Length: 143
Image (tube, rainbow, N blue to C red; front, side, top):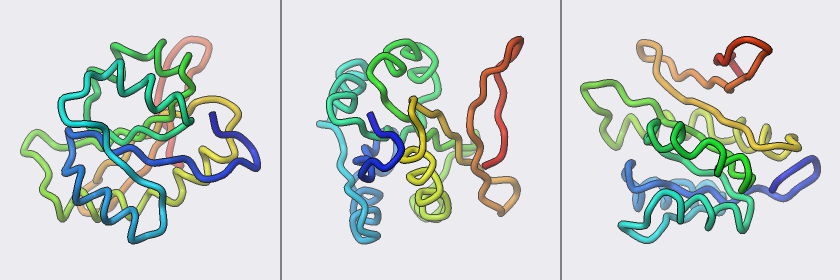
């Protein structure tokens, strides 16, 4: 798992996104980026990412919820790319990811425990949020 003073995490782009293209963009930006083998099951992806302390970039909110304990135990950070019901093309995925990835990596490096982030559009403006857990509720705060 990453923590204060740690090296940049490897960014793992899920096949729920345009993985090959987004991996290429991230690598052009000098990030360590990869994608899981096509068809790899979510729990196997989580354990694989946990083995090297990476950041899972996905749109799969159901998997994030279903495997929350496994994500925490494996020390996997998550960046959920929130897509509108109408979908999101490659151009918008790239624009959103490029606008938030550096801030997410910095937060991951400064954290002692796994973090969950959500990137979305508010109109045309990219928004980055971090999941927080309080005494009585779970919510999102802007980063």
